[in-house]
Image 1 (cartoon, one colour):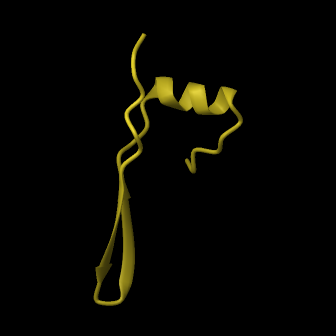
Image 2 (cartoon, helix red, strand yellow):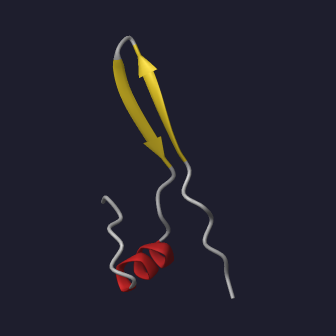
Image 3 (cartoon, one colour):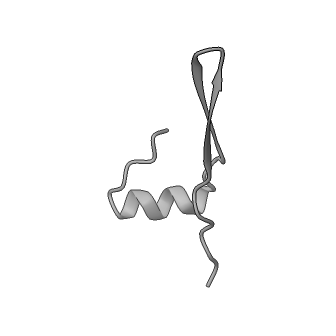
Length: 42
């Protein structure tokens, strides 16, 4: 059984602009979240 890594996200404030960077989901993680009806934001 493989593990799904926790989602990691960081928000950067650059001169008043909030930028969010996140690790991309693997295809396997996307399938699992889709099967659970959890939106991935992609």
